[in-house]
Length: 327
Image 1 (cartoon, rainbow, N blue to C red):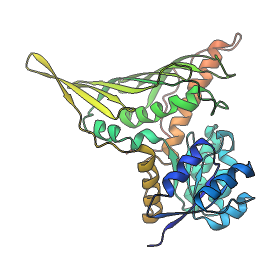
Image 2: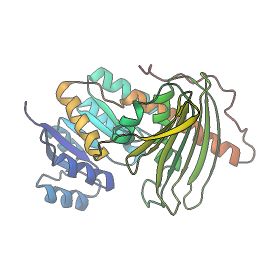
Image 3: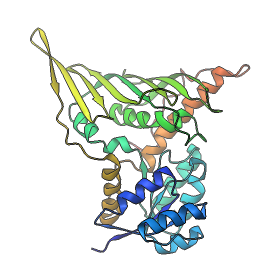
């Protein structure tokens, strides 16, 4: 089978990393790049000896699959153009910054018969894959995702920037309608929230508490899950995990075996494989839209409760049913 012809739209921080990994994938061939900054495109094009196209249409004419790594506000317009040309698409998260537009992208990909994968990278973290094998029925989930101020992705708040990773993971793990949300957030260095906390309650009784910050002096990406038979702790950054169990009258602690690897490499390899074999992605557009919808509800609640005159609260809302069933 011939190599998948890959185009990269947007060669900022994420786009450059995608280019690096595609260049090493034996089943992919970068056929060109495009960026709103011609100088940036030429630099990456020169590095990988590929054309830096002057227009998006020129790139779409050459590629059969694309990475879209532009600001979230452009994902709908650019992604739709690619899908309507019949191109497969790996979109960096969030899928868009608007759930209605996200649903339109999902429907467009369905009609076109193209792959639409969204870059929820933690689903490819080897530690998460190992951790997932120990889960049964989560009762309480606690997630922390902290980082120093990034200087990028500040066109969106920390909920869409960071928390959305944990939202998608939690929806995947709990698999029950979401019944209520409590949330608080604070803007510090940007115009949108830089610190946020959300508490999600699900119909099956599970509660998830999520904290995220992009003004922390330290990096942290951890999740803990409590269930009837165990307490499981995962560190995404170190790709390590532990499981605590009650055995007779004592608590045992065991390390979860993890075969470490680069999460982005695994994510891109999965996308290429999906294109080659016409398979469903691990995180398709519908699942990414579910996470986006919850993230937008959290963001709206944060700003309702922090703005005088607006009615706060999403608790007691109509139960949230995912856009597509999660099998």
